[in-house]
Picture 1 (tube, helix red, strand yellow):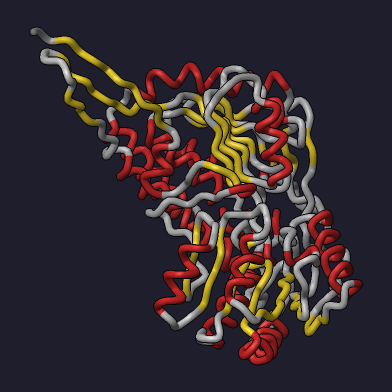
Picture 2 (cartoon, helix red, strand yellow):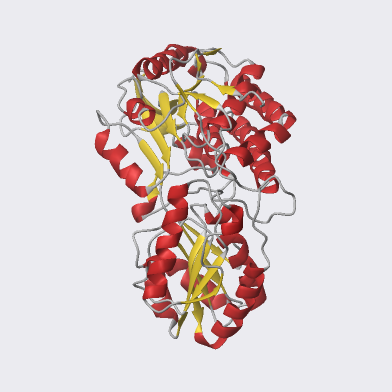
Length: 478
């Protein structure tokens, strides 16, 4: 039997020795894939204290030097692309092709924020009294606690870490217990680069470690990506007022106009609805299709989805891997059962894949003839299933799309320019993609509204989320 890799905390530039461990399971066959440190209060305290000790030196470092460190990390991440991608697939199931793409985007994020590190500019403001000058400067917030999920285990660490380090902050990362292996691989890359001790720190563990980190009084900001429920608990539990940035749940809608290119809309729905087995905050969850193209859309989407092959993510012929957790699998089942009970029609899929037990496999599923009260049409499914319903009035479709607490991303397909700007302005979401399904790009702000969180990642706005303003007013003579 092969020896399982050991994944340990990385604190103050050193790998820790664990007092206790746990073994995460491969979603393909429920076998252990690693022995992971389970952090306690002392571990968390050591990590935060190390980050605080390193803060003064890191924030005063010339930005061009911080930028070079980030460029170096990008290079090392690219060098270890295959091993990092494999670790993602092993621990959470996505196909190796998708995992490789994630690592490539992580490397690009380090390069992007390396350049932004040298573009942190303030301003001078004229006073209404002679002899005074006001200078507004941006300064790093301080020690960042980053709580990250399992669905994009490296990319979502990177969004926070790259911007935080570029801004001059230090960071403590607590990844999901389901994605410790890839996080350990990333920190091995950081160790190889030789960042100053304490600038980046990793604490691993089950559910206790995250709350311990959030509650630590040495933290200056919390950056979180995850479920709305967990985000709400974090916001309610912080020990003192501090900045928060949160990317929460999606339940993202797609509207298909009668003026749409139906083939293009089908292709987009299949990609953004089923990529990573639907386990994406900006996955298409619910689709509203104008009546005159509804049957065509359903038929073509069903055919497309039926052709997707589900299997081990390490198999290059697989289009979709297993779901990451049994809990996620159970939620998809619940949504499908609810839709059936309320009169929906399943045109393909609809159940677990018994032949692939004990893996967390669910058939790619299209649920049609949906109505707004069905769970799949208002609650985030976060699995390989989409709900589809017809609409007669575009006003109704917009109302249904906006009618949930979600406000992260929405999608609209039309060839009509007037509809593009009308619907684009009326959809109450932080990101709206028209005639495409890529709602986020690295150099534009990415964030949600309403119950989907607040604060931004990506772009200059992502960097500014780790900076605070200082007004320096100087009297220099009458």
